[in-house]
Length: 357
Ligand code: F6P
Picture 1 (tube, rainbow, N blue to C red):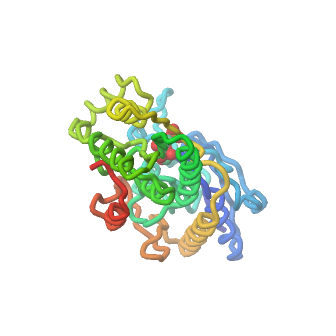
Picture 2 (cartoon, protein in one colour):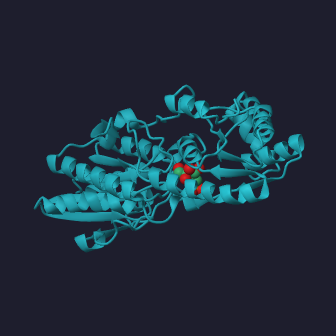
């Protein structure tokens, strides 16, 4: 008999359900007796003992379903060791609930913050297996996270739609893509959508270089320009500020996001009309794309396999086209960023894409 806890934490993404289905199907198909405890709304469910007993029926028909059947929430790692408003020790509460239910293992699906807490629980002696979810694809230790490809599809579709209207109106268009810290999504959707300028957090931009790239297109006869801008795109000047100074500057800014600031600067410097489109959370929504369905199912199956072997303390990841197990202590606290000198950046530049640098 295996008693397994499941939880999904942090921002949701596509294929969370597909991944959980993969874990549970693998366990059930092995012939092992399993009891599944689904903790509701991420770590909150584990802290306050909110769970649902789940059966195989709960995992039927969810392969294609977006969101998470367990619900999710953000429980920041930064404050995880602080007592809650009633003085409850959250880490202690999670351990107690784990032991009270006599769980053999907790399967945690999440991104960066989630992995830090998962590793903390591992250090406290809990058996943990994790799965890498996030549309940002920024988890260290895996070449790919599930949710990413589905989000690339949606952001690309958005740029595609903008393309036709940009061509009709001869305007400059900015599509703001999710990603505060890393630019994988913007880079991939930008290239797939044929964006002319791509701005990502890892490559600070110079507004004059952006204007130059727009002017160059005009000189060549192009009537419109499309920029794919990551939420976390940052100017060279701002990149020199400390984190605190930058945060202060952002709080005082009259613009809702960096894209609007860039739009105003382009208008001022070129006199051209600029429109901003923010697909926002649509990028995390809807049905997972076929790639993510397969990928998340494979990761889930391998997680189930690890549990059956009693191997804990790992994230199931993907490296060099193989599913691998990565020690949680290696994953926690590290970001996988786009290297400014990566081959894909060089190739994009060869194609004439400007990064504003
Ligand atoms: O981490 C996933 C992500 O979608 C980021 O790309 C984005 O910046 C952030 O979450 C948005 O967070 P929230 O859903 O809490 O607004």
